[in-house]
Length: 434
Image 1 (cartoon, one colour):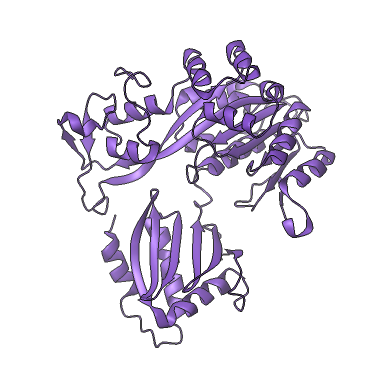
Image 2 (image 1 turned 90 degrees about the vertical axis):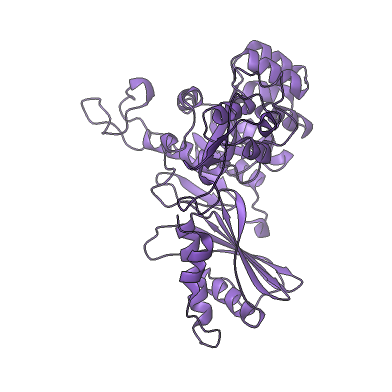
């Protein structure tokens, strides 16, 4: 990968701020640089010195070029034109999309008024051929196989959880595509589905097999063929909870809810899971076990969680070490993790000097089929109790997976601590043999 500084020098060489097309060229080249760097977000933040640009690459913000303050407003205005936003409104937040002729990348633009002018953030989604299906996500097989089976269920809720930026939405989109791929068309007369549509475990669907797939999102981030997708509009009292109530009259079978944010949405989604609908949604929580505690704290009745939840998937994204990494024998480099060896980033031309290249997923999945877990939920047990029971039932925790990744030289202790923090992974929670 080309070092970021050299990329910027090449991309913006020869641009003249006095040129009438300067803002047009800057926006086009910034978006191109973001795609070339594999950035997930592009930040344009005004300051007294100018317009500061940063790229979020592999989860971290990296500094980019700074443009003169005199042209800051013009650059933001051009970005708003591309996103079909109102250029004359700079006193209120706006959201829009940038449409490309090739439709090779999804871009969502958000503007927000600040002290020195409008700040803009561009979310660059993966191209249409990336992360389409479950096999593309890099989930471990002990999570992938059960998840596939659960997607064949006719009722219940599957929650993808974790902090912002951990790939929850990407996961549920992949789940929805998986369901759509296996429920779009009736099989031919011979009873064999079209190529690529054989359900997991080789089961052949019955004649005329199809499912009604719908989604309710805020906003719609990616179009999924075969799914009737709807976007909420709070301006007309069309929020997630209200939309779910009306959506139940649309004869749905599989419902994707973009995110559970409040008690009303949680209740509506989980009630749907109790009435013969498969529900896929996301929720902010630090772990699979913590998800149960947070939903209980929101006022969801224990019996609803016990009966409605199929599984909780919790995930994180860690930067993957570049092959240039080197081994370190200093015990202090383990940072308190129960690991046997440590590889540390060094930096080379391939990784742009960062020592990391790409990311890997850590995932833990809590299945609620065990009677001990069910009793713990009904008893409103604390998170540590649920975590312990899940481990006894065979769940491999995020800390165990993180330590395995370090032992295998896939990532570093510093990266694990950056993502998971310093509150675990020392001793009992993560044994040395993990």
